Image (cartoon, rainbow, N blue to C red; front, side, top):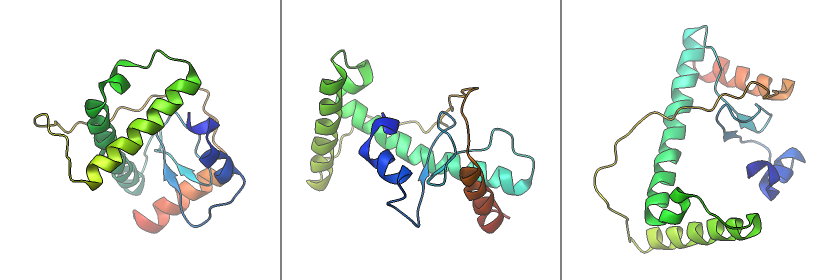
Amino acid sequence: MFNASLLCASLEAGEYQGGYLLGDRAYSCKEYLSTPLLNSNTVAETNYNSAHIQTRNCIERSFGVWKRRFACLSLGLRTKLETSLLVIVATAVLHNIALVKSDYFEDGVVEEKLVEDIILPNVQHNAGGNALRRSLIENHFR
């Protein structure tokens, strides 16, 4: 879904500078998308992977709340892709409106668990992405 988005196209075109996104191992490491290392060989690399996982888990927990608020997202949408995209956007907007209005979704205690990355053998990283990740590790995790 991300790869087909306007955001991805804008990032690929270099329209946004000075920041980057975090992705899991299902995505290629690119100049704008930092992914975890498959194998960490140094303390700095281990620290980077740990920080990456902890940060992504905050987002994954938010997705979990969103999916519990709109169960159709958890069950899988059985609609055409165009319709599914509209449902996803509509539920995101409604969820954000609820948060602005302090309508928090409570359905019990949510257990924190580490997100398991999907490991795809054919993910191709690029030199710019690897340089970004190496720079992050060297400048912030030593």
